[in-house]
Length: 237
Image (cartoon, rainbow, N blue to C red; front, side, top):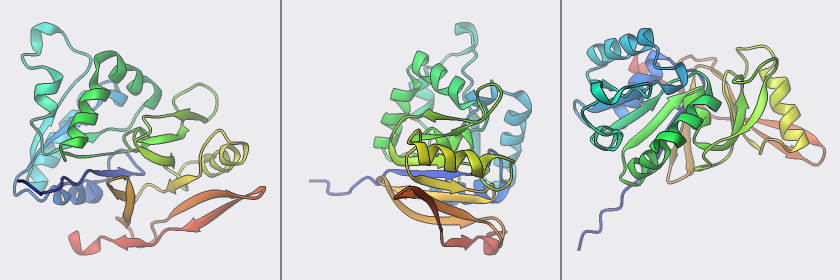
């Protein structure tokens, strides 16, 4: 009888592309030269981002793949399932979170990602690629102002990226936690990544010594920030 338990892991980052945190993501696979697929859906399959990703593969020692969603049957010779479930890890880009989740649902990719998660394939991403795993989050995907949005709900709570780096992020996070549009949750700045194992928070890591992240919750009628203990990754530089 096989008693080896599969550990399901998600690494959510406060910024779409952070080289040091992506290199840490590669190390989390525990594989010598892992196969890692970029899902650039939120960026509308931006060719520049895809080129950057393949450059990371050469620099950080992983086999870089990408799976576009804006495709034709004539240039895709494998199913989405065949591609994604053959990976050691899947990284989701930043961009428009609302549009990304709609495309995934239409193509059945949300279901495939859940299967990958259950199989122990490491999942992660930055900004939109962080929001998507939580109950809800703070997004710039709609016109005029930041809004709260529902996500896939695999991780409990909310996720607010770019927390200190972009104007208004902190204000709107507090507003939506206060009025109930967003759950209590994690608010992290761009140099921070947070790791979950089997839906349990494990640790926060940072690519800068001054990196900050918080657990933001409603206590009574007040929103309270509790700083996260962030492990600096300078030794990996």
